[in-house]
Length: 209
Image 1 (spheres, rainbow, N blue to C red):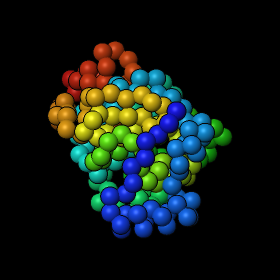
Image 2 (cartoon, rainbow, N blue to C red; image 1 turned 30 degrees about the vertical axis):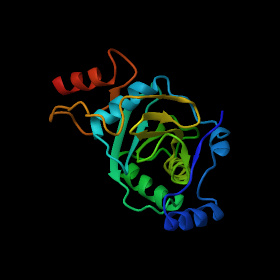
Image 3 (cartoon, rainbow, N blue to C red; image 1 turned 135 degrees about the vertical axis):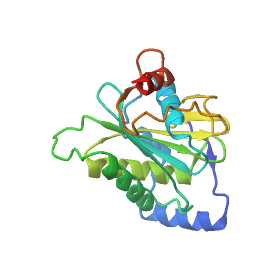
Image 4 (cartoon, rainbow, N blue to C red; image 1 turned 60 degrees about the horizontal axis):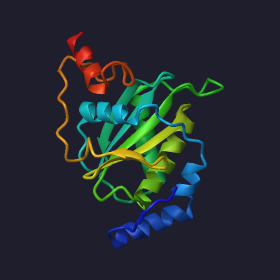
């Protein structure tokens, strides 16, 4: 599998990402592909569910933890305003959110839950240095929280893309209007994203309860 490559858009970003690369704080596509990242059973439903729940706009990161049956256990979203593309900074941001929504699994010999990251950004689906820094940050945050490192997904105007897998779709996209959820849905209620009539239907059933 091959990746396209998009250079940084500004000189400041290039300088910052260069420093990150020298310190090993970003992952190249080949490194990510060789890391044994587990495949999602139904990435479209996972992406649709997270898009409905968090309504991401460009510069929004959505970190989600899935159980053994790929049910959503917890999720959180935040806007990353810094354009440093430093994996260290991104790791700290992800770890902070994970600690707020989910106890760590460091006492387990083998991780049973998987964290996936959906990042909504400008540009197209091609890999960027910023993506490499998010990959590094996700992998390190998972290690420090006792989770298995899962998929890294980008959401752009062209649609969504699971980097390293070649799977993607046109909807949802960063321009899509998300399906609104009922106010009664608990922010981190477990949802089975891969069953029934899809992620949106699962969210509707949760709202009805």
